Length: 128
Image 1 (cartoon, rainbow, N blue to C red):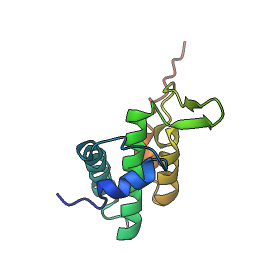
Image 2: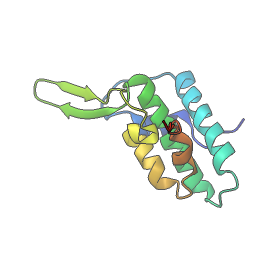
Image 3: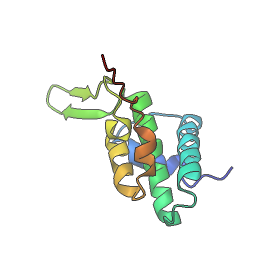
């Protein structure tokens, strides 16, 4: 299966300058594979350009990487006395959960990925 994004392209998005390798190529491939599957299933006939689909695939893979390694994404970083804070997974925010997922929502003008990521249970009303 040919993916639109390579591990080295993904690495440029997810890693901060000066940091050592955070993930092996096989690990990055697994995130790319997942993103590729979603893009192929949801956006193949969307009318989006191949360049846009590649961009979506890259940031979607970064979103999955962030969920896996940063427990939801870095939300605060302090240089003096080194401190990092991560978004804790307390709600189902879908793609809004990470900075990468938020970018996917902007890139996907069809809204299909955002709709797929919002799995809210239906409301239930009871009349007494």
